[in-house]
Image 1 (tube, rainbow, N blue to C red):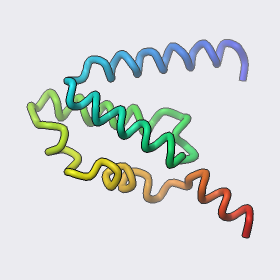
Image 2 (tube, helix red, strand yellow):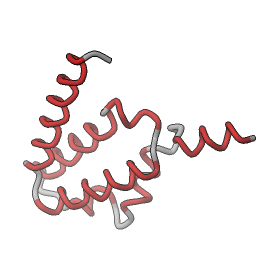
Image 3 (cartoon, rainbow, N blue to C red):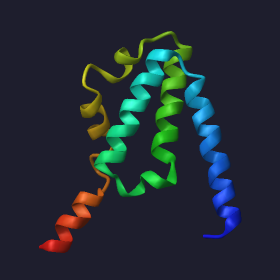
Image 4 (cartoon, one colour):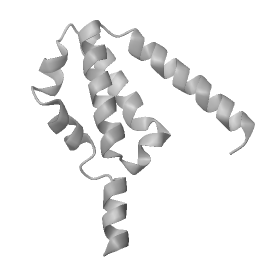
Length: 100
């Protein structure tokens, strides 16, 4: 990874954060909780940004249509996140395979 890749990655992350900040307050709160959960669970492909960007896109559409965030994802944020990554390998899965 070169310096240009690092700079471009930072630009993309800042643009992503700006999109999150543009969401209504309830959406921002739920997004941050989802982000914390996903960082903790550790899907291997989380670093490519597609999952988090997709969540922001989904939330932006929901906010534009006037729906509440809980109407979109349901009452259990963790279960919603688990559904998003159910077929995605996690770092815990890789660790389990390495010790067996």
